[in-house]
Length: 256
Image (cartoon, rainbow, N blue to C red; front, side, top):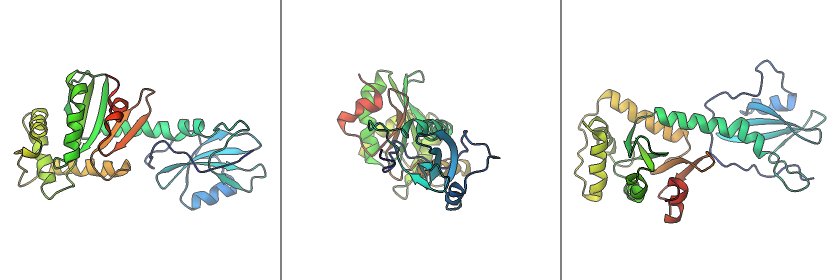
């Protein structure tokens, strides 16, 4: 039986919250402690065959499965397969690491500062980290029109200012507008011809919101716009970095 292979990861994750599955008072085996000393965070334990003990962990912002050998002296890192070639690691890692982190990630985006585009009762929500000077963000906005206009999708633009010297000023101008949704719509409709003027001085509270959005963007594992986050048909959180190809729009917005 093949014991391990490279770890299969379906979502970038980060070390922001403690997860259930391990008692803080539980004494860890010495090899597991040795990995903790190297920066690995143990978040849960799960059953494994062949005398192994499974541990779900995080390291450098990613999930990691650890398997303690029966003698308690050695640790295997990676994916465990059975004799049929079935992955025995993904289900416990999904439960202990990826699903809780995905929920936390979605909740943090909900609490961030964003401008809505579309109906509040739309059955699907898509988050977009958006710089006002990003041409690909504008192209994505155009791609979304059939779904947004039909009421099926609400885009939530998490505004950041990172691409140009006046990006933050423009993002701030949208956020303080009397009707931010209308101001954003006007800006996106105009595209390259937009007359949106940056604020010459950004209020402290708005700057804090932009800084928090930019920090969140980095914590979610992306450094460029558009960064698009959505839930697939099974509720799993997905990320699209950059402008999606036309054939990928159905995955993001749902089928028309």
